[in-house]
Image (tube, each protein chain N blue to C red):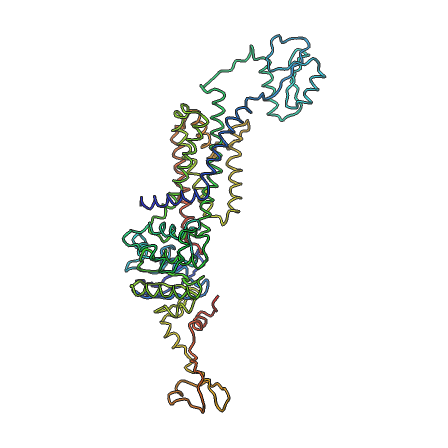
Length: 331
Length: 282
């Protein structure tokens, strides 16, 4: 059995090399690393909104360096017309009146809060600092986590589909039905190839973007979450490939999965938008598990691991049924 | 080697495709399983090769019930040639054969080079990817894959499909060679010439029922019209007459100067196929 598994594993690696999968993964790794270190960090260091203050009575003796004073209400309106993301504070009446060019309800509150914070930062507001991550490291971990999640959900999922659709079109899956090997090994070798590939990717991405010493601390937990996500996505990719006729149908399924898996998760995890049902979204739990692992807080709940194991087991059974069905199909 | 009793199979609740099939294939026999498209040939072969499960009736292979023999030992004893040449297109003939043969015990394997040589595979293509091969060359590699493990039971589905006449003759020679070695062959085909030349017995299947089973010779004899058509020259004119075979016993019963040809009106296996299955070959 072990010998058969090794033969299948070797052949799957050859197929992935021939399909340039590893080349794509290395390319992604380079692009992600460049983006995190030269794009995202610099972009995130930019000032969020310009804050303009009109204070004719001079009530504020010490104002933040990030506030731009203006000399008249007309000037305030003029700069807000030009800088539509800016926030104006009119202190002519003695109490701050926040002026915005436009915005949605939630964003208005954020911008208003930010402007108020700058206005009163010296005396009224003192933020409590938790954790030891610097702003840069926090951003690096945050983006590494998101990109690793995207890589596995999108690229890994497409990767297994591209390899399997080739085998399906060549008809060789049917040949395996009459070879002296346990049929489940065919599925297991594919899972193993993608699991190893995703784990190596996670190690390299974390090392390159989080740094050696921080990586050592968080790596075991990150790898556990990567393994869970990788197995789920590889099984979903395998199942979709067996059940769908061609890559066109698969692309549609992929769009739906990307839409329903990634969008609500990123919205819920990274913005102020909260969906009541998001806690029931299995990928949200996995994503948060991965994010917490990056921030040194690994998931300890046994319920999470039991649910993950059950989910993987159920997917494996479905994939086995679909695989046997495919082997029995006409040419 | 193969014993099938009351074999039934349904896809879903209402779609019964096999209705109580009964046949026996002896050791070293070449058994032809002939039928039109959708008649149940492939389903039967899939049941016999262990791909499809959930059949009714009993099926025994190698003296054991099929549900008990679908182990790795069983798959080591069989070789299967599919209707289409299923190969890894990015690998060469040698790499494909190395890969597929690596699942078998080394002691039962034939030499890859020797098998390909027997199949008259062009040596300059040995290391080129299968994607650059013609259909005939792919079929040769597929046949090599089926033969490489020295199977005791060989399932062949349309073996000469995609081959030129020389290739078809070569394949028939190889199948004959397998018979001489004692290999049992279960042959599924539309090619009545292959069936006629190779098979010890043939079964005609239509709509999931076996409608005739016998040697090709007896099937033809049973349905012979027992007459001959004689072409001859008489007083400088070419003529043709159909006469019953008993009339021939006393010699040619009409005046003639020269006999040009005598054709028996014996039906071909293709005529038998159409007669029994009610459909022409597609």
